[in-house]
Amino acid sequence: MGICSSCESSSVVTAKLIFDDGRLQEFSYPVKVSYVLQKNPTCFICNSDEMDFDDVVSAVSDDEVLQLGQLYFALPLSRLKRRLKAEEMAALAVKASLALTKSGGDKCRCRPENICVFR
Image (cartoon, rainbow, N blue to C red; front, side, top):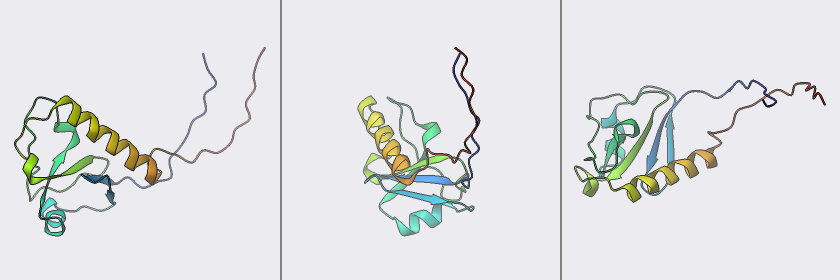
């Protein structure tokens, strides 16, 4: 048994988009994939929940709206409909982790509490 303290995040829920170069773009409002693609025509958008290694990487439909609280990747068109190797998936996970850490997305603001330790 450990010492636990609740933590409430004060950050806004966003749709997170990780680019192939490791950049993170967040949307706190509904945005269509087609809007993102207009600004990034050499990419396609894929939902992180729909990615499995040794499975074909598919694009999210242009008319779909990025969902708040969801993580997406913007990948080069050359990777569309290709099988995702385990090492490629691991590299994407590292990129996402670094981008989220850099943005402070893995932190929450906690208020200090008095802790009583019994010996």
